[in-house]
Length: 295
Image (cartoon, rainbow, N blue to C red; front, side, top):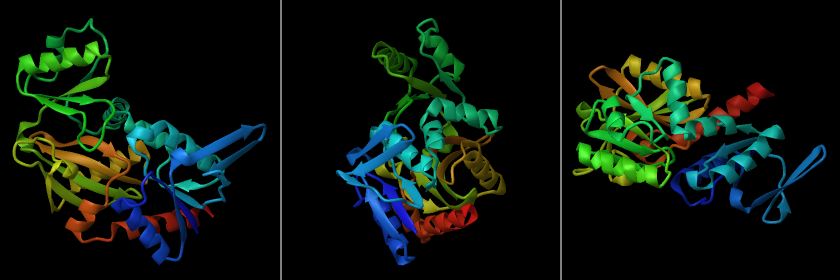
């Protein structure tokens, strides 16, 4: 097969591992920077060039699109999809997952429990009322666009919460407010789902003095055994968002497992190191199976 990886940097661990495993399994693979692509659109015909040269047909594409190039990356991915290329995560699913508010709406509507969340862009709703709607402080404030723990703030007091919320409103920055799950103790679970099956899970613990458990923020990780309920929730969440490969972030609350977020470009380094599994190979095998089904 001919496989493309959409990424700005092929030296990143996840990209290099996927490329390595694809080549090991006999596939031709190319890492393509979406920012170096251009599309020509005319009546009944579209063509794409990369660094000024026409791109050949690809059987499959692996989108590793960062939030900083979301629009351009999605546009290039759509071109591949419209020309019959299989994508492990569809452009529409990536858009849904990247919209933190909409993804939570989809999960909630699908019966998945989430932290109590409030989104409002109107000054008509008093800041104090926003705070009370999630149960008061401490609380979490998240920018609606962000990844790897960037744009996530904990407000310990009403005064700090009001200050941050009013500042974001004045700057016209979209955000949401979530209840703080104290009993999580800075831990969450990253469940890796491939083809609607949970293939691995790790527990991430935030470093001392930081509530964010992301490994990029200095968090530690260990292998963990999921309950059947947690497995089912992870699989159901991936199905609701309609993704073939995703990291489902879950926290253990007193009322049960809560889904925090869906990551549609989960990093492979941490989960491969902790689990000892060849996750990159599992993703390539998944592509092979889906291409065979498609054919």
